[in-house]
Amino acid sequence: MPLDPDDMRERVCEIHGIPLKYGRMPIYYGLMGPPPGWGEVRTNNFPHANSYIMGGCVMDIDNDPEKGRAYYCPECRMAEQAYIDAGGE
Ligand SMILES: [Zn+2]
Image 1 (tube, protein in one colour):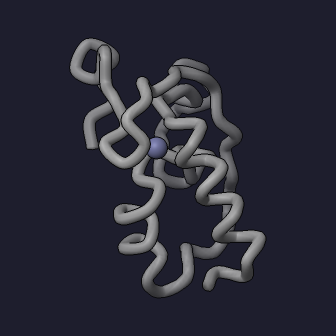
Image 2 (cartoon, rainbow, N blue to C red):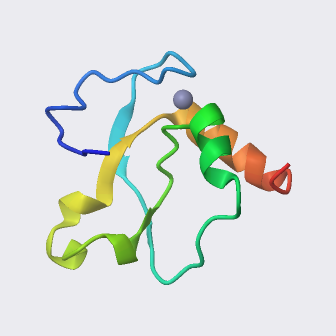
């Protein structure tokens, strides 16, 4: 998915119908991949959570802090957290 700011301007979450916010996100290094089925759950329920990015997938992030930023939907983040808190069910 491209992260070109011009390309993502004025984006709205198709699930929650609110504008996406642009901000910083934590970067995790060396974690295991998401559990099976996570991608589908995320796509269907909180596609714009963007609550973290995997450092291993990003080159030169230490030299370019802008790469630690992305658009996200706060409602998606809450939905994601609720999903995690519920034990992934
Ligand atoms: Zn959303």
